[in-house]
Image 1: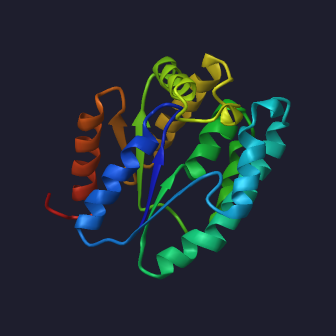
Image 2 (image 1 turned 45 degrees about the horizontal axis):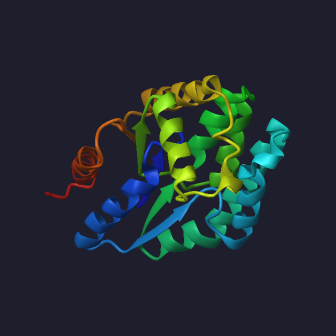
Amino acid sequence: MLITLEGIEGSGKSTQIPHITRFLNACGHQCVITKEPGGTRIGGQIRSILLDPVNSDMDPVAELLLYAADRKQHLQELIRPSLAAGKTVICDRFHDSTTAYQGFSRALDKALIHDLNRWVLADVNPDITFLLDLEPAVGLRRAWQEVYQGGRTQQETRFENEDLFFHQKVREGYLELARQEPERFVVVDAAADENSVTAALLDALAEKIEIAV
């Protein structure tokens, strides 16, 4: 099973993944935790390019192709082998991020992105996608607070440096994707406190995989 978490900066994905993992482990699932970009050694090098604020002049198409390269390596090296071994993969961001960020916010051709994603993913698609939905102003405030408190590095703030309009378009993109695939997406209000968000995620997860909490 492949579970992905999506959302704007500061939506709490990394906070919630340990809660989801503990729940699944208790239910007998062997979990592999990963992220995009950067889920592999090569991907980590790509991540350093993509998220470095020094690279603010990166061409949007170059950005798109770097994400595709990271995802292809990630799939071949980690995700496919883990799924083939019967493990549950929990991934912080996946292909929906590319559509939301590069398609909706960067305004690149969505049909091209769809075809690129389909080519890279082949037969791999998330079974469940949790969208942690949040007002962009709140998310950015949370994200910068984490940076200032040392929870994240200044060298990975290229997207935090984008303006509020950029992040509003990302959020709109995510919500549109959720409307298009309601059977896969679970939209959770990420403005609630951590425990409430966790409860909502685990309730939805239990229902999705037919496990009684």
